[in-house]
Image (tube, rainbow, N blue to C red; front, side, top):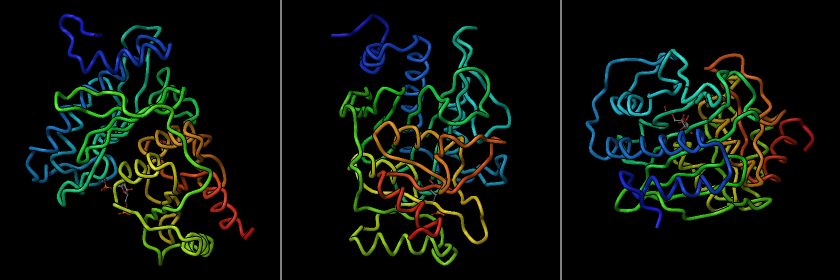
Length: 305
Ligand code: AFP
């Protein structure tokens, strides 16, 4: 067994796996700290009040109390869309990371008892305004009927599931996507879609794809990734040229995971991970999931189909 004095088995299980990945000790430490924080977030989600905190974040959105709470839990050393400052983890001068995270994505869904999640992107150094391809790792934690943690440090995608002792144990290794799938998750109002997007939806319906959309980015992506098939999209809308989802806090971490699993993520023109962000709050349209489906979306958008 991996037990060590003063350490919970949960830390050691995840830590041991990460150590086997041959990555820096600081990165192992950082991922374990985020995993540790998620235990408090799920506790807040399951037991917290549903009142509105009365504060707003950088983008003028009203924060639910649970967002604030989750952000406080995750905040130590980390940058967040709920905060103005960029925080860095400075465990030592050689091993400095910047972390972009959404502490409780889809928090309004807690009111109706649907699944929510935490999304995290990790960069080496102190600059978050880099293409997502520069990330050294990314992860999400899904707070559903079970709590699962899905991560990659560029060496495949792994899923850990929280047990009754709140320990994360490895449940899936080297998760891979099929080339094409039969699930689609379309965000935004369809009447605001462009003709290319509308044609893409009709193509998916004609090939027999089933609609699977919860309104939570983490559970919707998790379904596609765990089933290994499907495509999620949140396109440009007639009144929102960049769609809704945020590049740093939502899209890059998921694109990193999906690419690692053999899938693809694009804004319709270039891979999500190649977009150079100009600001922390930058948004982008997204098509993410099975390679063939995402390529097909780009074809429809560019009028090639
Ligand atoms: P909230 O955090 O405001 O609930 O937004 C959730 C989210 O950012 C993401 O989790 C979903 O994929 C997306 O918005 C859903 O947006 P629509 O309700 O417009 O489809």
